[in-house]
Image 1 (cartoon, rainbow, N blue to C red):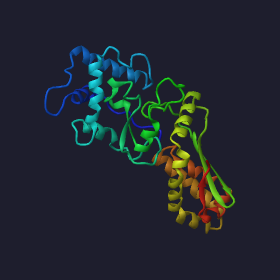
Image 2: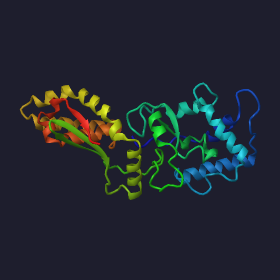
Image 3: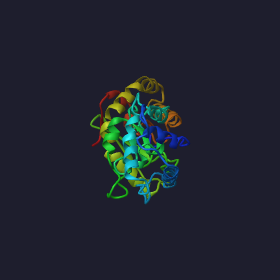
Image 4: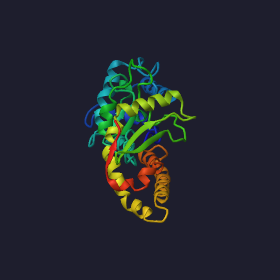
Length: 285
């Protein structure tokens, strides 16, 4: 959740040429050496800016005809098309959407929107594997709006090794209420904190995590019961949850929703002291 490994871009120009060349026939646009150099400079600028919008990324030195051809060429990344290997390469090993942390990968999101940054339409580091729901909810979030009303770049974001995604867990009238949120930690900059908060809210993750929380807690039932049946009871449950949180940290990272949930539950005394048996689970608005 939040971050992905930076993809290799050594084949960026080759992938660009494939995007511009139908399976049968001559290229829609035949790139000159100057145009190849212009695309290389564009990709290098994108990397230097770490995927942030900036002067030069709209590629005014690349002709409108060529930029439109690249825009259209993105369709070749669909399964069965000539550039499908780019999609396969980017999605390989990514089991869950980096935006929500639970849905399977079904699409590629243009970090900088394809409609504005046409020349970047097939650049690997501008394509984020995502689930269709997050892709749709993200939409075109780069434009004239506040700079903090954008998503972080899943390849370049400067995220600290601290737990900044937390779950507040309380028992209310016998029901567990869990509220996820992004909190500002010492090493989390104000800039990134505000973007993460915006991203979390735009994706409506508190609402979308409801079913995931329920299913995950059901999977813990046997372990919770076994811990509660020991002489330490509530303390044993808390320790079981803390150990499970540490396991999730190793598997999915410090700021995965399961890690946050387990830490939150470990600190909820009423839940540990038999509250988990009630089976009434809800999330705050």
